Length: 49
Image (cartoon, rainbow, N blue to C red):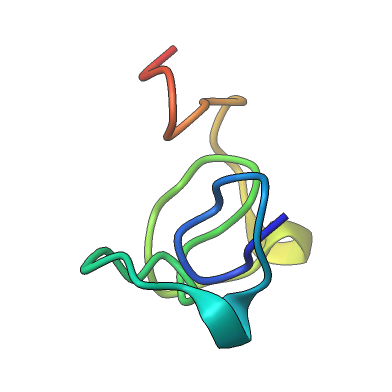
């Protein structure tokens, strides 16, 4: 999994995506905090659910 665009099939050092999700929370996809400080519900940034 790429930790820059969050897609599977490549690593972040090979990422060619214009999207940078590296600063987003893995739980709620909000930028600015990490999963330990998240109070939001689970949301998938790739499927928007």
